[in-house]
Image (tube, rainbow, N blue to C red; front, side, top):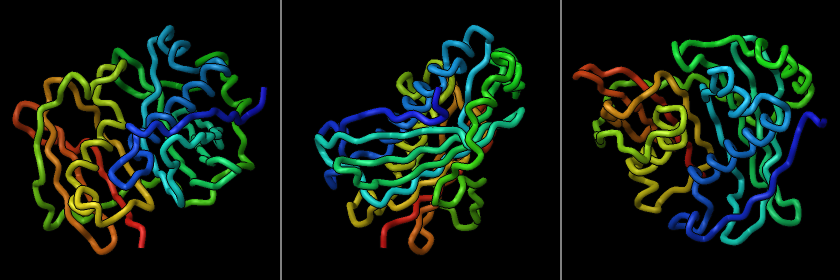
Length: 250
């Protein structure tokens, strides 16, 4: 079986934003679908891991787009793993539109956790470590890697706080990684005013959030980008959950 695979999607109009482009959160969901299809076909997808009481969790994500798919456009997501270590795997995506129009790239870091302890698990213990056979160390992406997203926390403003709701929680019983992106988009002032469009979105996930938690969003504009720190609040104590940088198109 090939190390990379390509999956086809369509930009439904009701999944497009006020500027008539596919929403970043929807693109993120399609990317995660492609990643799961790719993993499942090779024996280490959600179903195989669930049988071992394990799950994939997203640690870092960066999406950099030149062009977003337009309403009704058929587009393609190619995904592959560049490297797999015992604790982490590095996954990339290439997004192309109709007539091979380059839309953009994305890159990520994933970890595997034990669903009981919520602690990191040994990736190579799944399927006798065959996941290593699908790593393509000669194939990277032409964008900066997903980072830890360092943010100067001075002068951050509390923009919103909200209780975690049913629709935020996914099958792994924590706030879905793409749901954080939706929340951050909702508090980004330049996006809500339609005055700026996104060039690069970068997210670093620190701790899980659950149904009984509350989320606080602290952010600020910093030149041509928006910085946001999401804090989970449990029993009145804040703990960092997510850091996000949004870089605008010039």
